[in-house]
Length: 191
Image (cartoon, rainbow, N blue to C red; front, side):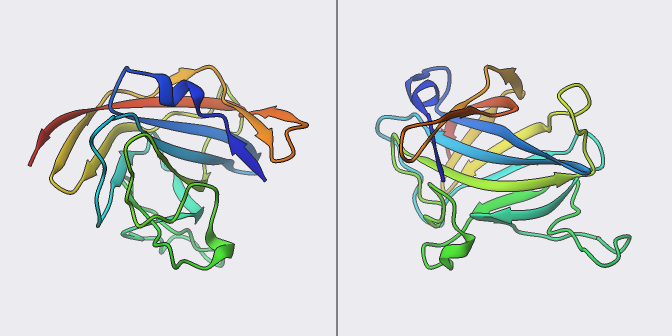
């Protein structure tokens, strides 16, 4: 199990919510990523029923599996036989899992029911395909949205940034994401 080195995101003042999309492994038709939302706000928490995150796929990607979060709609996956994706929606909306979610569906920093206290993080793991299977063929999602109860955020475009480094729990090994995208979402107004 790895822990995320979040120093860059937590010390960044470039936005109120920073989303990091870390590509961890290539799969036969896409990739597996860890997506983390950092609440950089000093005095504004995200209360229950929690945050929602959405985006539009750059191509015709689907979500094969998720750990620590779920989509609110599966969409039309009728073209798939056998292994059915978790979501075939072109613009999926993702929500955090609740704390009572079975432990085998958890990753670090997940399952808080969408509650995101000031200075904290929330993560989920996602397997995406069909997507590019290398740094030169994979495409970033676009049109990110981050919403919370009575709060509205405006998100900028996804940017390819320095790869996130991960340290094993025993502190003896460091690895890096294959690619890291960062999305900055600024608080716009209370609704």
